[in-house]
Amino acid sequence: MALYTEFVKVPVSDETEMSMYLARPEGQGPWPGIILYQEIFGVNAHIRDMAERLALQGYLVVAPDMFHRSAPGFESGYEDLQPGFQQAAALTPEGVIADIQAAYQWLNQLVLLKERLIGCVGFCLGGRLSFVSAAHLPVTCAVSYYGGGILENHVDLIPEVKTPLLFHWAGKDPYIPASSHVRLVELLREAGKNFVSTEYADVGHGFSCDARADYDAMAAAQAWGLTLAFLRSYLYT
Image 1 (tube, rainbow, N blue to C red):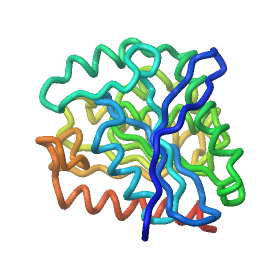
Image 2: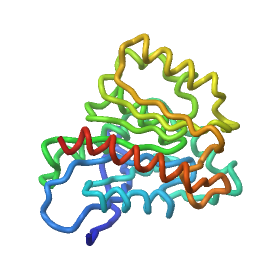
Image 3: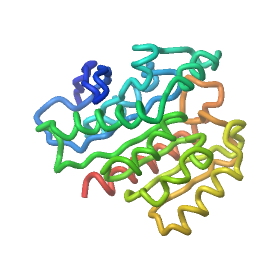
């Protein structure tokens, strides 16, 4: 399948402008949409590759630059985490909500979009943003890969979640203790939410990224297969 890719500029409600990486199949569609949320390392080569991999599965994908206010176009390597942590610390709740709404609204107005069907997928920081999107946006489904800080910062959003969720957790994650995601799942279950939660017991944080030291090919393939099945079940109904 041939792909079309480009960077697009999107207006945000706070009068800023956000760049998004767009990847889609060539042709007229229509296709379901996916908002792909970055790690702390920016909309880098890995995130662009993931956008293209999703597009090859028949999706209209946008990856918004969540650091556009503090460092437009920011990318950093996986060896030094501090630059990414600094950019993530500059995010504000108001800015995040404005950005995810802008990404959703831009996708939702495209004539190439199939039946207003939009899901979201996120890695690391983006995994947390996928959860936030499930509470704040009318997305059809949401996938979160090792999203840190959900229980600690967004437990109040659980009642607002109205979309099916898929979580991927790393059993040897130094940033997300097992107690955190176990408690999150308990609260989601108590609230009667629709979710799937999987733990890959013998891998570390970032196991799905082939540019990271923690990459695990088997766990990544298993998680990717489940992600594609989950997305297809809701976005290609």
